[in-house]
Length: 277
Image (cartoon, rainbow, N blue to C red; front, side, top):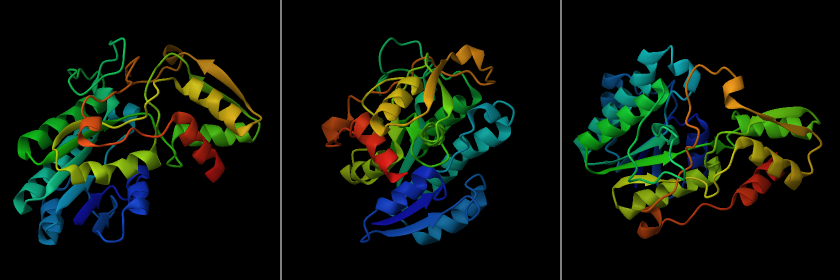
């Protein structure tokens, strides 16, 4: 297959490119090489390549910054994917768009599946949901992949926190918000198998163990024998500008039915992350 990858400089983009088999032809673009918010640049760059699939890993993911940089949030997270979907449609390519667990409001008692109704509470979440809807309306040959609590890319909270714990520092972590911690390498490895199913639609692809960042760090500390200590934090005490769901854990009613294997366990993922550091 001929693949176009946007957001190639981000954590998921880098992980995907590290794992895509050599027999696929890949044209990868960082933000500096292709700003997906520039509609004309998207069409002029992607259409001549005539890819079989366009995988969008580009996004404005600074949740709090989106509250004030609303124009950029909708440009990068909604209008950019719309342009990519239009380019994909024009050449008969499949479009894959990565979305977020934050499209839900967090009031459900258990994990959210693909049939639950989104109710975003932040600008970031609204912009990502808008991206989902524009992709769906533009081309039927699409995959919308929701994930969350992604770690292991190098610049994320958990990677940094584990490094600080290894150095003997005390690290705070939120103990009253639940998500589905997802190792970026495992998420990246799931993208191509899902794409190759040809079973278009919306899928939740995330870690299988709902928990808090506080619990994740406690497990990492035990697994790695890390010297630092972990302190619980309450989300309300941090004064973050953007609202976040109390519970954004994800489950899937569809992924297994199309042959997508569950992601490895959290302890397995943490062990691989710690050993690679």
